[in-house]
Amino acid sequence: MAKAEVRPIKADYADEEEARVAEFEEGVKRGIEQFETGQVKTFDDKGEFLSHLRAL
Image 1 (cartoon, rainbow, N blue to C red):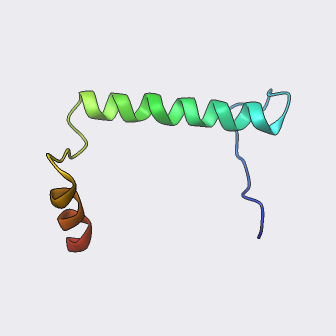
Image 2 (spheres, rainbow, N blue to C red):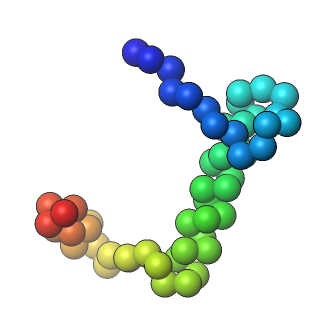
Image 3 (cartoon, rainbow, N blue to C red):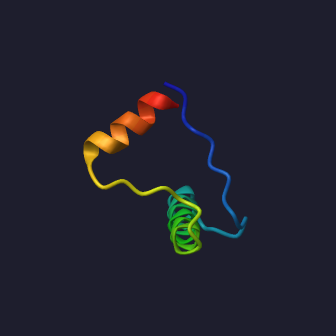
């Protein structure tokens, strides 16, 4: 299996693990910001979520 390429948001990280953690943190922050501005869809239960996925 090929190793996924890590593209750190900043090139000054000491190692790949730090870069991955930074990317994860940025993704979480971005997701929270999107949620707070109403850019994401929420679901009341698992069935509703699965129905939405099937409709895509």
